[in-house]
Image (cartoon, rainbow, N blue to C red):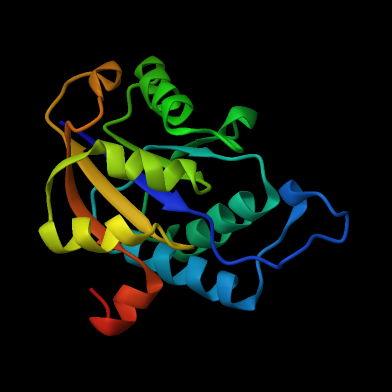
Length: 180
């Protein structure tokens, strides 16, 4: 079995001082939300063994803050920053997942952006948590986390509609359910 975690970056400022979209930083709410989702991940094994993070500033900050919240609870994962995750469509994101066969983690996390992350989540969900699938159908919000399980032995076998949505969480949903 393989587990894939798709984490959208946290809430950001509207414009970066440089004017470049890739340079947008997290705002105060984004920092709080990234810490909250990181803490949740740290309390809910299995933990990511490998993490692929978009090269955009906001994705890097989301990962750094989330990792800070979980690092005392979770063994350190292997972290990479592939530049092609920024602006990736679902097919490109799926290629990144397939490439994980090289290091073969049992649990892989991607930290990236919509619309690609949301579209990938919708395309992977073949079964699983009905309420989570309904909620995810509307949006993968900032700091939203979609967790998929695949009954496979190799990352190259991950395919659309083959995933089971194990859990969908976001800071808003965590507040509604008071935590876990």
